[in-house]
Image 1 (tube, helix red, strand yellow):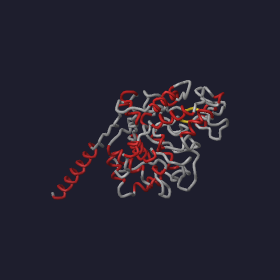
Image 2 (tube, rainbow, N blue to C red):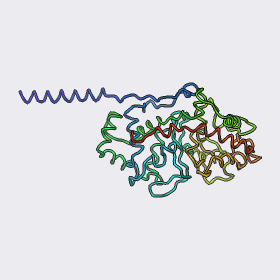
Image 3 (spheres, rainbow, N blue to C red):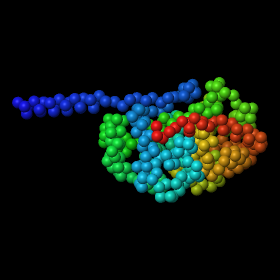
Length: 351
């Protein structure tokens, strides 16, 4: 009889635990969408199979800063995407665990949930934020590891199995769950508190020089920048599309063309957001321009013609839009109003 009662007790405990496990759900954490975004653009893209949760975001943040993802455990995602640099780095092209430099500049990370075409990286090769988080781990020039090793290290870690259980209701760690957590964290990186944002909300004023710089930016007879980078009604300050912006007459890096196989895409790269330019030098996909003045000079008088030059480069025959020195200075002043000091100063990796 005692043996029978003991068996019944064990069965009740098992059923109770199973019921608790089945009913457990991570805590929802919807994105905190800025008012400017609510007013001007459509809702962000959140995959139905990777909804934002408190536990998922917390796990993704820990993974993002953990060197356990690299082959020799010396680098993390944050090594090339530093918060104080708007989640970019300050090198022309990033360097991996073996000291080898890649071919591309580190893209800053913010407002990623509003990338409506879901193409990530300079050449658009990754078709979701989750897939983008997968590639650097196994890239031999970046973190130079492999996912089997990473999963083994995470699974044997004293903390991660429980953190995965809290985030995804399973302590069995997989590559898919790891990249889902990182993507959840990355979607919380929202920049929307620049001087221009506050101006748009009626909270501050722009100087005469900054206002003229906006006019230069918007004028088809001057800067003509808005076709690719948007306008005050587009708080993303990018079309998230791909363009050949006249960097080269011949291509050593095909960009989007290497991904699609379409020669009409050769030399096309993703339009970066103009937000946080103050923190993200050097510029372009290969970091060739050290300063914003260099970038402005390129569009003013440094354009290079090629077979796939974007039709929006309407002054290509003149080498550029030919801005005066005064308009260049004003344009620079306006561009700096798009930087968001709160975004880089409020983020503490230890939180």
